[in-house]
Length: 188
Image (cartoon, rainbow, N blue to C red):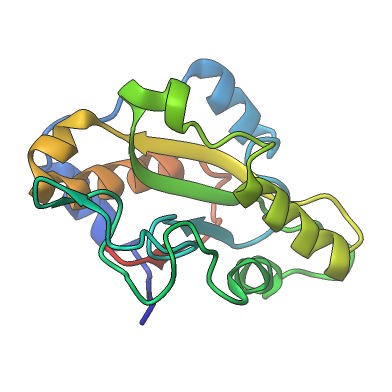
């Protein structure tokens, strides 16, 4: 079961009480957001989790600590049916005709310290599948925009994962074009 949360009201509260976890977005990222280049042009910014939301973690764990999630209903790494189309439809829901949707932002618990191994690149299967969904429906470029990572800290203290995602969500909200609603799709 997937849940859709609107964190616009919760994230500022969570960020206010969470220890400082994430640095501010880099100046180049802020400049891109101000021009709409980082997020794209659409009205609604879809923000998604990856593990157990876009693809199954397979329930893999190490020393009793889940590595990405707990779902065993699909094989590890399997994309859920319709998930890319779902993200695209949410992104397009409030768009006037001819206006491009905002690219999907990603909040992931993947540790930034292991980014060299775990980075979500534009060439990754995930990004390619989002782009393919747009080509079929819009015949226009679309896909994954900003990706905000977690930290090894959250793997040591699992209860901090939610705080990290809330803090990263707040970073996205603060850097998004004025008035843009953000919609989180995920499980925490």
